[in-house]
Amino acid sequence: MAANQTVTVYGRTTPRYITQGPTSKRQEVYGLGFPLGSSPDGGIFSKKTGVGMIKDAVHQLLKTERGERVMLPNFGCNLRRYLFQPLDESTFESIKREIRYSFNNYIVGANIAKLSVFPTGELGPSGGNSLKVTLSLRLDTADLETFDVEVDIS
Image (tube, rainbow, N blue to C red):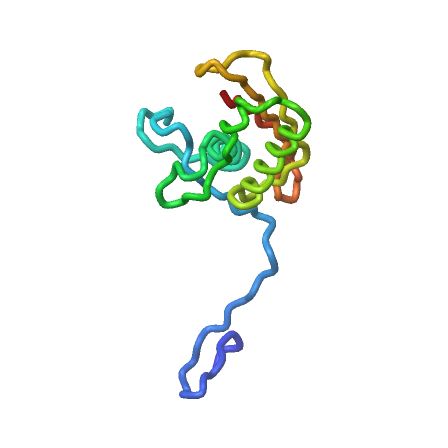
């Protein structure tokens, strides 16, 4: 019998495989690119990975109101309801709490390093206030890459 084979209970031989330790190759996570139809090859769907995928997911999360998505009724942040509120510290803290709650439930692969919310001083399309949300995010990977995402809410 060869040295690299073992005998099973039933007398058949099975090859013994050499096991290797963990590899350094990083597995990429892919997601759907938004907006749909923005594929460079002219198709409807495009793939994104890494920072681009997380930026698109954050934009989608912050601009979606809860109850807007049929199969995920809790997806999103209710940020438009704050547009006609007095823009003081308690309102900004409520907005930050809302963003952190939704971010922790729906964004995978990044953590919030810094979160800022401030008024832009411009009137939105409906005549109300307009807000700018700036997030500094850190990837969960070994290199801990940090990047910023800005979203305008009007």
